[in-house]
Length: 131
Length: 252
Image (cartoon, rainbow over all chains, first blue to last red; front, side, top):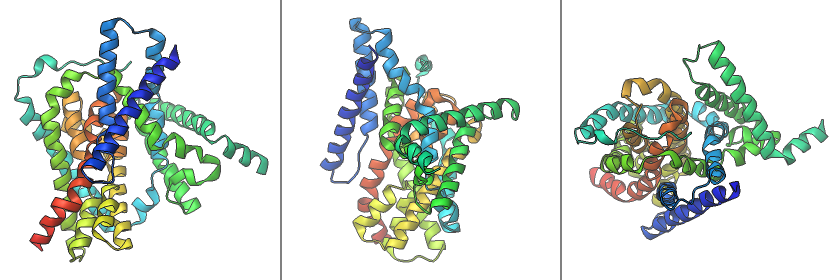
């Protein structure tokens, strides 16, 4: 049943976000720390566990895959609710302070990737696409 | 006319599904016909979304883009954090845990760099613009991390409201810029594998920028970037009002 897949995803969401909230509270900040990350790890573990137990069902999987296919439309909607007016009209300081650090960080990515690739991890270089 | 707009408003979420569907369809046609598929349809759709957000902001004077226009209020729900996070988590279905574990340590390192570098570059730029007090400098620096870290930090250390607004604007500029630049920069920074995507998510951090940027580049990379990016705001909110603020007080 499709709803089982959606419910499994919702279970991961609720559990992960709750852990993130609690972790934030625990270290005394008013923010969710890694909620999405915990939820993703939980989903990976559950998926793995169900596969090994043979509990997987095509329709159940589709309940989750539907949402991963909805990801781009949701991101399009998200970009349509950004405060772009403020970003464009807030003067040069905000433009510089927003863009320059991002450029510096972007330019560091190749070095970091190379630096970390020197570890032998090439046997794990492959990965399964979503769909 | 009134009946129609009330009807659209009442069914906001479904209207948003329809509108986004039409936007993506139009983007796919533009991608095929005008750019010969060189620019992915998702990138065009996201930029279209940003333009809509700008138009909506100008038209309504509000801060939530097109969602402030009543008949498009459903965008607020569809593009809000709940649906976004739900969809991001679902992408983990196709992700490889082995790759995530392998990249774990460099992901953590890039998270720290992604907090410290934007912070200090932001502080430097604020200084160049004539800010001298530690509270304002710290708040603007925190805004350069993400637009959530900025106001959280400002509120914690008592920044004035105009500096807070400026730090939010800085973070929003960053998110929009990361969204637009990622598909173009991807080729030059080697952003075509899960390993680099995790570093990218950690160092760029801003969740909306990273999620939209990766969607426009290669949706298969989304879970990897999102996994590290999710810790970015938390780390920023942790470090900026505490360690980095204290460091600033020592320096100035």
